[in-house]
Image 1 (cartoon, helix red, strand yellow):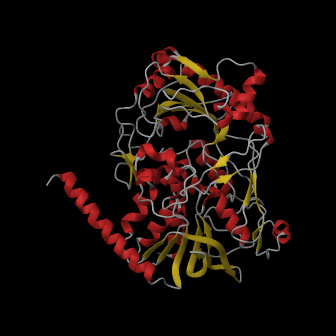
Image 2: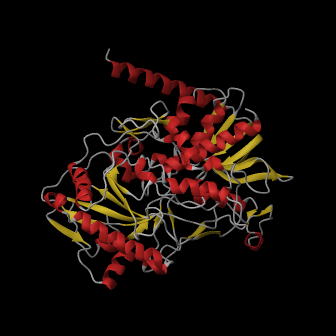
Image 3: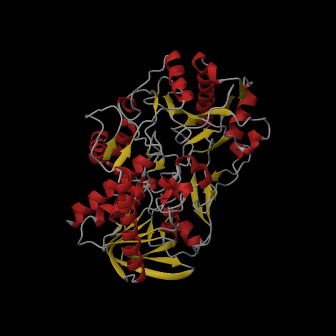
Length: 542
């Protein structure tokens, strides 16, 4: 029997062991667990694993979505099929006057693994300036770049060029540069050099300590299959008796008595259930659902809660505020002379740059995509051949900030997402420069062999270009910052991610970020999960 066959057989045996164990655990659910982790995404999966590594600790991991054992999750090229599916929460932001009145979709993962099961599988750590900003905002050096770098080295299994100062090779998380990258991706890096943009061996190395550059992505892909954070962290421990994973269960409220979280209320098949936590409740529901559950539990702006007849437990006006997201223009597109099939996740190369020389760090990014993508508004105005490729011009450091608002006290009452995208004129200015750079790169000599013609935007006057941007802007699915950590009166959690004024309640997901980092949010969310786990272990002496 070959090594591959042996591994497949062992994997199959372990999967059956997990299924049998979890079936037993779900068939005899307990009334109380030591810890309840709500949400199995890129932070919650980490917290659940780290706590369950201690055999004396019982952990209940609750997930609103269902199984991740489906081809659309597992197979790399199928990721777009998850958007708008039952594995997507299907949020939509309010109509936005700054986007010509458009109401843009806000996809978020509703499946075991959360966003890491439906995303584009890019591992981006964030810029040095991001982590040092987190440390400054919290007053805690544990969030500094040097501190976080040590965690990254510990958890990574990096397959690219060795960099012992920055990269680890013995951790849980398999990371690789593209294997035999698509020729158009290689040509994009050549175009960067042509324009005087430095090219780096590793996007997550020295490039993220300086003013920018170009590189291939780090990918969470192995043998053509997605490597979600849930599969890397949580699944390997699901054969243990102390970790119960409960899918298809909606957390509706944190139960708080005498100023402390003692459990959660949930819906399973439409019926209410209560689970108690003897030690802590950890919310890892994402930057939309975490503030929603907080507010419906009586934690938020007192006046807004009172207007909905929700009893106020703790006045924290920052809950739901400070909404931030990366945005991109979908997209600048060129037609291939001869179509080339997409490779890996369909996007393997990227450029980070500054929209203005005086900025401390990059604030714009170009993401290559090996197939055409356009919003319905742009697609209606352009004839886009299927054999095309594109560049997403993305804004990484938005100054526009939105807010989330409840519409009622019941779980089924929707939350309003007032994104305020492009409400700050500086964001439109930065995107204009980003689109101009995308066109310069796409039309460079190095990419001429992959360009029959430019489809859009082509050369436009200022008013037409602004209209192209407003009609093309959409989310990069990096919703964050709605329960930020910090020390001011709009902060929701402290540096240990404990909710101010409520004992035994912690938040571990992208909502705690003080600002959205220069990165896809999966890797920073893993760090948030690691930081929460380590804080719990220290404080609880686990």
